[in-house]
Image (cartoon, rainbow, N blue to C red):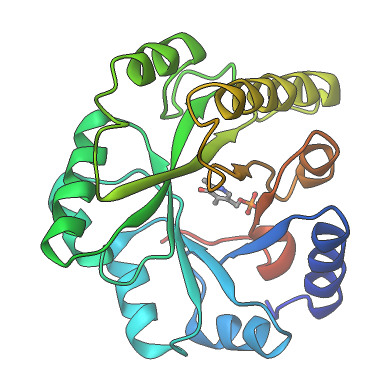
Length: 225
Ligand SMILES: *Cc1c(COP(=O)(O)O)cnc(C)c1O
């Protein structure tokens, strides 16, 4: 399926009008699709697999900003740290420590988001609000010198219920604002709220998203082999 050029431009413009950035989620899609979106001006791409993202980084233009949006395993962190723009999916202290360690080795400060669990489903990764508060109060994650916490990421429930989605995004936005006013009060780089996908990016923008991660609406449905 070809890239939906009109959709790329329209979603990218809607994001911009709302002061947000479109991350084109290109997982499972070929280089040619990414090049097509690139030629339309898109520079931010999201992937959820380390190997796939690394290969694409090597093959594609170097001014692409690569966003890791999938659950990470510790032993693979080292492959993406040298080039990744932002890791959205920090879901454990262990992963944060590994990103910090690998970043320190190459003298880099890696930008990350903490993944918050806001959906009603059981299977999604991330901390709930209470766990996140405790994590941050304990200072463990804050004290890591080679990661910079830029904000939060979350995924709403997979549901048709728009009110439920809105409420979940509002919960995340409230949490984000709380952290911004307290722990990260003196850190202007705490500025990123990554929420919204193909099915719910409009609600996400209404409720304060600064980064929407859109895949299938741009690149068509994904086929997993
Ligand atoms: C796949 C994925 C997306 C994009 O999903 P679409 O519904 O295709 O837009 C966004 N965020 C994460 C974390 C994903 O894994």
